Length: 272
Ligand SMILES: O=C(CO)[C@H](O)[C@H](O)COP(=O)(O)O
Image (cartoon, rainbow, N blue to C red; front, side, top):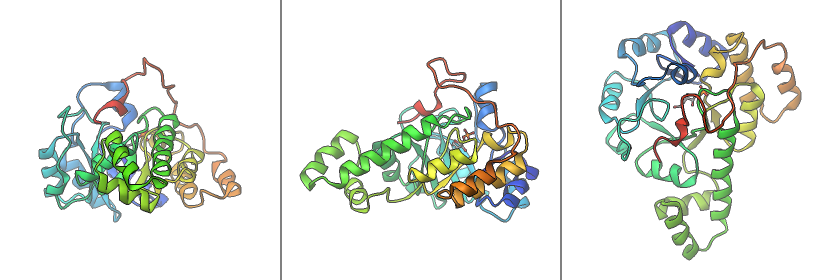
């Protein structure tokens, strides 16, 4: 769960979140306020680290390996090389093999996911369209990844060579993905998840876990919604429980439709 201070971090931990993401503004606010979004103040990240016992993740700009060096030096548990911040490099991602701290990166399809893994990403998440409260892009990205994996899983080795070229992905990673019939790393949903049902939808589409940013602390009752989303991720195949936890949550965040004039632009188009 994305949190911007120690108090929110405690709410997330009490709700059962397995990690928090420390940042100064949740994606909905970054989108609304505009300007250049950068790595958060290390002091603020340290306050969140001190407030909770669960792992703390923090974001760096795409390609900004010095922000990553700084976060690693203060001991964050994971780094998110994120399109939600303003990219620092429009061509290169960070060489994540140079770091000890594990990274998560966003992807819209299998080629993008495997390129990030080849650079050293230890976890992948859908890009979705962060800060919109609209799950449609996360669904599109997860469905794309799963459909491409299914396609690869029935290919001969000769076909996989050609498919790797199409996807602009390393052959050995594609071959391993085809054999496993899933990404060879943990695969999260992120970007636009706002309700327990959204979270369970992404789990039923094959994700291993869910990131929620704006959807919790921009809703009417953050503590209750946070607990409900944790329950929905845990029991994603149980519609009765999903109905119970979806009751009386108060207003969800106000969502944005995805159109060509999307306020703040399409964050998912950053990095490729
Ligand atoms: O990890 C992230 C992107 O780097 C965000 O936490 C995630 O995408 C949040 O999006 P939203 O605010 O729509 O839930």
